[in-house]
Image (cartoon, rainbow, N blue to C red; front, side, top):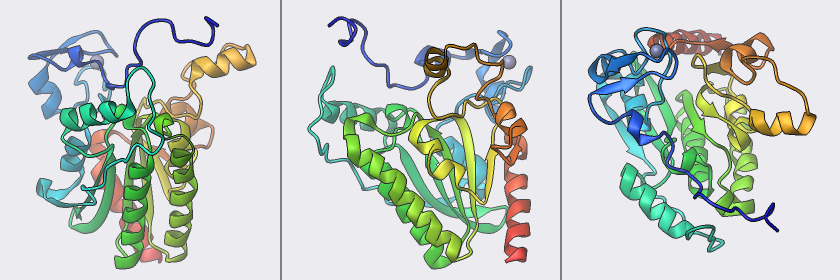
Length: 282
Ligand SMILES: [Zn+2]
């Protein structure tokens, strides 16, 4: 059963390869140039030479979006119970502990309340380095709470997605989160509170198939991988070569799947303008 068993190599869920971000210099995947890390950080982690948007963690994201890097965190105490006692190459419980130690978070999302250019907002920012930003019961519950909070206090909601999709170690329970969050978003819609979805690299699987595409406005960062199944799986299934740029933000915009592709530098003013427009319209 060699085709069925994984033969070698452990599943890498650590997110971005660490070698790229260590030390003083970073090599850009986009233009192959060597960039001084400080220059990259000063430029919002966007390559100053070719504009490639590097992945950033949830805390950096919140710091970039919210005024003066000041915000209150909610629901930070939720953590997974490993409902299936799942074991692949190592137990899910030890994977969780490792991710918690590495990121200082309980799971792959941070719920924050703060201000965006003076406007009150509720933000859920996903953390890709926590088991690939995968959505299990905790991410699902945390995002649902953010949605419900937004509806209760009538404050606009922003969800910044960065996720490989549902968390396979929680099986069906992770799939239930798609329906749960979508239902909460439907109630937010009825309450006429705006929801802006920001899709970043990568947004795939069950996250794309639920809340990431349900915004009143769906916007993405340039060059982000966005899709349901990965390009390799699709190619193998349909036995056709995919067009260049397939499943990247720009391709999706061209095909009507997104409302806009927004440069990271423009993201904050863009959201502020959109909120003004939506709140006035309401
Ligand atoms: Zn570059």
